[in-house]
Length: 352
Image 1 (tube, rainbow, N blue to C red):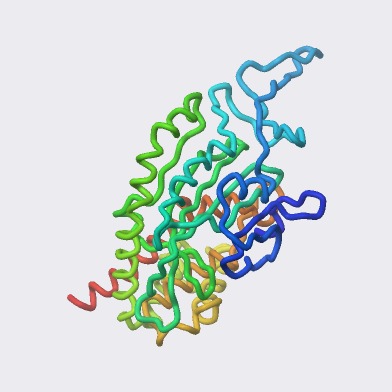
Image 2 (image 1 turned 90 degrees about the vertical axis):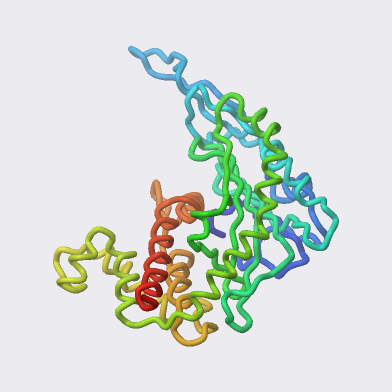
C-alpha cells in the first residue's frame, strides 16, 4: 500500500497518531497527541474537495456534452478521479468522516481514538481509522493479541460507497482477521453515492453509533471462536483440503484426484497453492501459535492474502482499493470464510 499512498511534493499523504508504534512504511506526518477529523484530513492532505465536470463526446467531428456521464475532478489539482453517471451524488471528505468525531468523544477508557488517515492514488480513495484501546486474546496463544478498529473509507472514482466497518487485527503481525463471525454480526454498512447520500448520512449518524457500539459483542464472538480453534489439532489432510479449496476453487476435485502436477490446473492456481502452504508453515506471526492448531491454519491462509497476494488492476501491480474490497466483502473474504467453515466442520466431524 505504501507505494500507492499519494505523494505531494515529497511528502506522503498519510498521518498517524504518535501514541502507537509507527506504521510499517514510516511515511507521512506523526502527531504526539490525539487527532480530530479536521486535523487528520489536513495532515494527510485529504482536506480537498471534488466536483462534477461535463464529459464531451465527439459527434460527427464536433464535441458535445454527454448528458449521461460526468467526470469527478479533484478541485485542487484538477485531476480526473473517475467517470460516473448523472445520478451520482458527491460526498466531500469532510462530510464523509464528520461523524467520526462523535464516535471518538466519549472521554472514557473504552472510547476509540483516530489512529490514522490517508489518501490513495491520486485521491480516488480516502480512509480514516479509529482504534478501540481494549485488546483481546487470540485463543490461548501467549503474546498474540487482537485489537478492534473502525475503518471509514470513501471513494471518488465511482467504484465504491462511503463504507463504515469494524475489523479486528492481529497485533503481532498487523494482519486483518477475517473470521466467519461477520455472518452473524452487523459489522459493516455503507452509503451509496446517489443524489441524496449526504442527507441519508446525516439521518443515520445515530444508527452508525449504534452499529459501531456492538464492538464488545464482536470482540466476544471472535474471542470465543479463536479459543475453540486453538484446541484443534490440524492434520496434513486438513491443510491440503483447506489450502486446496482456497487455491483451486471449483477445480479442487481435479487437484484432489490428479495432484498439483495436473495439466488441467493453471500455473496461477498452483502458485497460489504453494504460496498458501508457505504462508501457513512460515508466514509472518505463524511461529507464535502453539503446535499446529486451527488458528495457525486459518491465520496462515489470511497471512498469504494479506502479505503475499497481489491485487492488480489497470496495469497497477498492487491496487490498495482492490485489496480493501477483496478483504471486506469480496473474493478474499468469501475464500477465508469458506476456509474457516471447513476448519470448523473438521472439528464437528471429529466430535461426532
